Length: 332
Image (cartoon, rainbow, N blue to C red; front, side):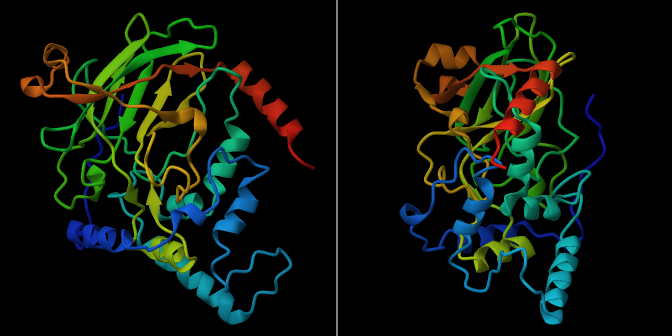
């Protein structure tokens, strides 16, 4: 069961500050067509790609043998101190979120995921957790909505939880979370009283799952703190492509943290945190059938987008074998 620890904003937290930072971030003026394609990062490719994406900053030194001056060291420590100041329950319930964000934008999270979460053929790929997972999600029945009314355009998400042989996995615990139509997570609202655009449900006996949500939108990583400023100073944009987070856990299988990325997002190939995998890119289908919309619980039978994807879990034995194969294939 999810913990019901209350997530609250600090006294000086202002949602409008975040929205203003987001508006400024959208004016980055970076030619996306000239950026390297940052999908399907592996332990072999992530470091080189981090260097390339940061190459617009003439002050960045990546060589392991670079001599660090005292002023540079002091500036680094000051940056880490400011990073620590930004950490609060409003961004993450257990781990200091600004440090998670720092790990994400430097490609460390992607590197760690690639080394520790390699999957066998046919299993759903993992990707970064991000800083907005919380432990206070409400429980929902299949077919219910994880988002309150007015949070964005309607979306219906469904599929099955399966093993690598195609057998259904009943009773799997599914956590899901996303932004609303404004590009904000619920924890970015200063007046948050209850979780929203997030929820927990269980797969049915046939492995199926379904829930109503809103269409996710691309958004900037938190730009009001030192990590957002770092990324901007590196000459990079701070945007993540639209995505829906999914975390699935079932007895006898490895826990999976993944996300679905709708095709067509302008930031799909230059994700600020290197999280996109080709296998996780999905097509959203427009549904205009009023009767079907009403059956799925949408108000007045309004049109919606449909995301249909199965999630395939690996056993610990399958995962271990996949990781051994993966590490043995890496460049020495």
